Length: 297
Image (cartoon, rainbow, N blue to C red; front, side, top):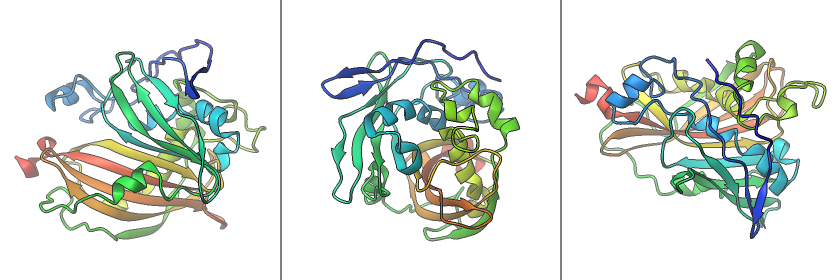
């Protein structure tokens, strides 16, 4: 189910080198996923105001700002690295920001990025880049401080370094097309295959393509509710295309915990099924809510 797209024209406001996009109201496109964190009833049972807008949906608000700040090559070699701080619910207003870019020693540019509510609540924050893959991104910096878990129940038996390879991945237009209708910042490349020789995947679809490793990598059941805690999408030779076959490889980077969650970090890499160099990679951190699992009853 989708809501009507906000048709307010996209306009960038620049203040002291900081670019701000318009205030948008992202749709909780997964609100009908019963029992998930996006389901109003289940989310409220777990202490949230309502079903949450997925972090990959928030990623869709940044690309026009990133191309303005970092250049059009962002869609080919760009990165977006976000740590989520405060969840939002369906149609709650948020605004994306990109700070002034600065040169990176290895080439390319990096800029601070963040998203806020009109009241100034920080929804997410991190970095964006263009050029060589950013090995000092916001999430890669956070990974250096992760403390290993001492008590895992949902993720029991999993360990850092576990790998999975050659997982088929394909995003189909029949599924992604209706979701494009709800994107806060639609771009021509999501709609017109003649521009790049195929339909480019919006960030949420590109992230979904890279998430195909999750179930075979972690091999966990369905007795829990999870939510995105952090996402880094890095194009290596982008974009990712809709209706194309890829293979995906995954590796567990770290397993951690907090009083309320088990935490899983993994990295995946997407490459053409017919052979060739990788086109994108992902770092994703998921928070698995202990209160949602009978293993923590």
